Length: 259
Length: 291
Image (cartoon, rainbow over all chains, first blue to last red; front, side):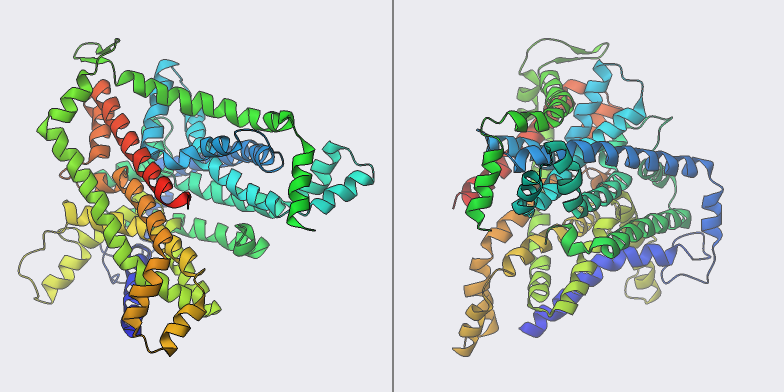
């Protein structure tokens, strides 16, 4: 019985890893389609990708959106977490539910709802529109992660600073923010990756001029499934893994998520 | 440093909630503008009438809801979406439970490796993951090519552009979420319980059925809620792996808004999807949070 559980567990791991293996392996194949196991070895698809201006532009667009989303989300989310975790006030539980609601509401619906709003206010700035959408669906994670950091904070630190004569702003900048910096770094990296990989909201909010990388891939797949997509996918996967490795190196994954 | 003192200290900071309101003001404005207002607009659109010339006619009619809830076409669509949600949830549970059990019973080192392997698919974006299944399960895909080469099958298996490929893709996406939910409850079960049962001669099957399953029920419920809600509103995977042949609520919503340009009906479908999601979440909260 336990052997059976073990065997099943490894099969499930294999199932989970299959797409990763196929894509990374397939990006080096010499065949004009993604073959597995890959036939021969070539960097041709990566080379082809580097000469695709549309993909390079899409990469830069995604990068810009992710950076803006991270900055805005961090400020909004950290402030909200401070309001939630350092104060008691009536109706706190309801506010908490309200703040977490973008996690419960379907992403697709949030995308369409924003699309409607942009139509009515005639927003002609797709980049801003995309950033707003990304902030909306990622900011609950900032609130949660930074909130966990604040809960773990030793109140004696503040008391000590306060009794030594530090004002509220000084305490915020010199005591609280440095103390919760691991959660802030963790949520930044997390939000950056989520924004960079975000596809559902982006598909609705992208315009022909402002195309994030996942949307570019989506429209390309409609026409062809060649190994160039495996190459760009491999790069995206590598990018995310590097960021998570940096996070692990800096503060450790367990500490990052309050584990 | 007693917990009581730190809680009292936090409260002491602000009894009136004025400071909290200050901190919460930016996010509240942001949510009102970009969450409440847009959702309100969609709700309002669902009460408008469709017009072939001007797309919509402002007003208040429940005609869209009436049409959708009586039209067999939309009822089938809704049924298929809910069935898909159910199917994916059950499969995630069946596949996720053994893995979660293995993870929670492993030593620290194996546990970390297994967790990293389980969670790493979350770092791959949805489109890329669907693309991988397209490559694997396509008519000339890796699986069919292998099986044809080996002579196991004479013609490609019909595993692309149908419910099978959509289900596989959706299970793959939701599985890590289910496993995490399960591991978090399994980890909290006192190992002495299973040890005691073992020493009293209970077979592993009995231990799983009588101790682990009942005690992990909250994790099962949380994971199932998450996976079900995620699946019924998933758009990218059904769109890519269904190849226009498997329509769900989400793909229909997309086509009503982007291709067919029938916003009132699209908005009505959006509202139905949202209500179903909220009902499921509410049901879960009622059953499990208040204990």
